[in-house]
Image 1: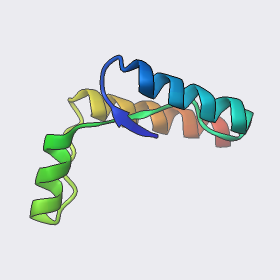
Image 2 (image 1 turned 120 degrees about the vertical axis):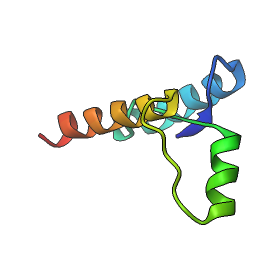
Image 3 (image 1 turned 90 degrees about the vertical axis):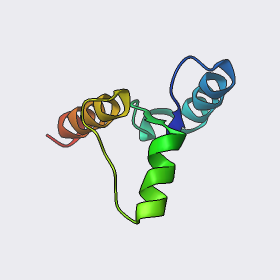
Amino acid sequence: NMIPRGVRPAYISFINKIREFYGDTILQTTVGYQDAVASRSTMSGKLLYNSKTGVGEDYRNLVDELIKEFD
């Protein structure tokens, strides 16, 4: 799930409804979305990723969850 970073009640509600519907078949980790990074990535045609940002931490958490899921 790519959602805008920060506390956003509408998005949290949306994610909770998805979890209710799909149950344990989806991962718990969400990956935040930052417009500026996405725009630069699109304009340059390259994946721009800074591992020291909040989004970078989200991806590390996702990888950790995947490792636990498939270990």
